[in-house]
Picture: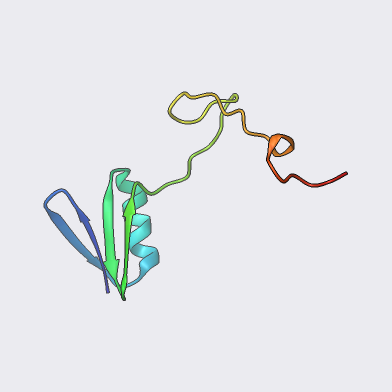
Length: 72
């Protein structure tokens, strides 16, 4: 049994998958508790569109500029 907690609300789900799906649909900060785990955050997939993060910040990370990158 997993419980999704947000604001003053608690909703129980039989599986973690159901709890995560519900949390993703809510799109707000939640806590999921159950089966010895506790996960917090805003669930969902973020994406880079036109070189920008969902919050509008430019996404400029690239693998070549990493420290410890692959040797050629």
